[in-house]
Length: 100
Image 1 (tube, one colour):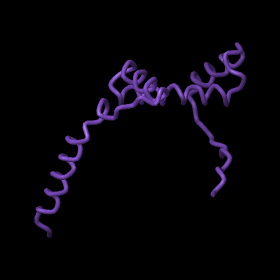
Image 2 (cartoon, one colour; image 1 turned 135 degrees about the vertical axis):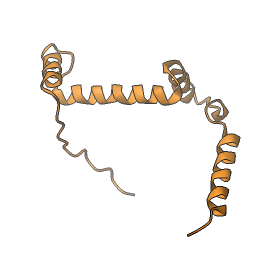
Image 3 (tube, helix red, strand yellow; image 1 turned 90 degrees about the horizontal axis):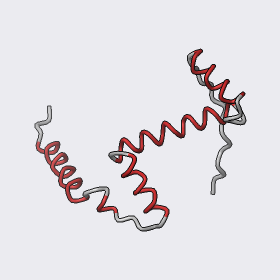
Image 4 (cartoon, one colour; image 1 turned 120 degrees about the vertical axis):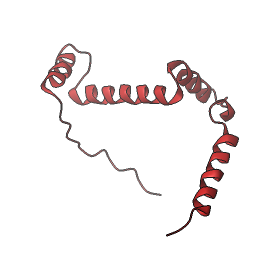
């Protein structure tokens, strides 16, 4: 089994306004460090992206609640029959396409 690698340092370039905002939030005690502030902002960005993918905050929250309760019914989130029908049609179209 492979051991997980420790996090590698990453350099992030921010606008001067964003850097000043994060620094002020750390100084106010909202975050313990600049690293924590950046990590929190990235987590928020990931949450917003997930909500967009799921079709809104309510759907994402319901999904997360069900996931936590281990009561997920994937049919509520993915229509597998439509997905695989589209996939088969796409593959058939590629196979039937003239090669040149």
